[in-house]
Amino acid sequence: MVQVQPSLELYEGAGYDDAIFVGTYTCPSDVDPDCPFICSTLSECDACGCFVVDEEGGPWGDAMDVIMCLLPIIFLLGVTLKPNPLPTTVSLPAAAMMMLLVRVMYLGSDPTLSCGAII
Image 1 (cartoon, rainbow, N blue to C red):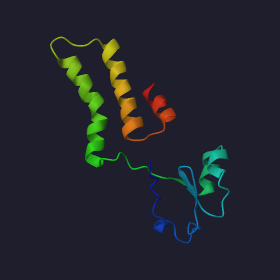
Image 2: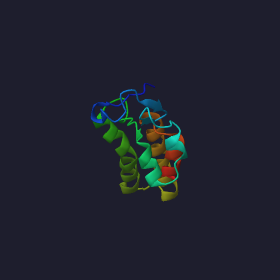
Image 3: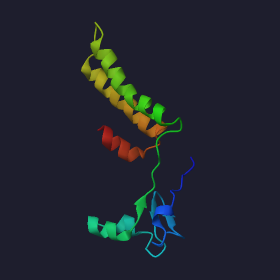
Image 4: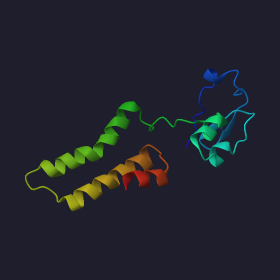
């Protein structure tokens, strides 16, 4: 997987000329790179000056991102509106599993955060 580095044009003069890329965070060169991981309050994290690197969706473009994210909803509509509907004890967990697969496999989201979002 290729990590896209954000444009630093907006941050010129703020110490981002030789920025440090730590995981999914980008921090100014004059800040401790561990700052986003050890801050405990919003004001402390804001003082770090770090920002999250945006992953920008899946590999097939914006239109396919929308289609892939709508697949579980389309599945639920299809199985509940048909003449002999699937029980919700089957259809809802199946749609949740589809959404988990879309987030982890297509969008490349963090598996732990995706599991938390699905639950």
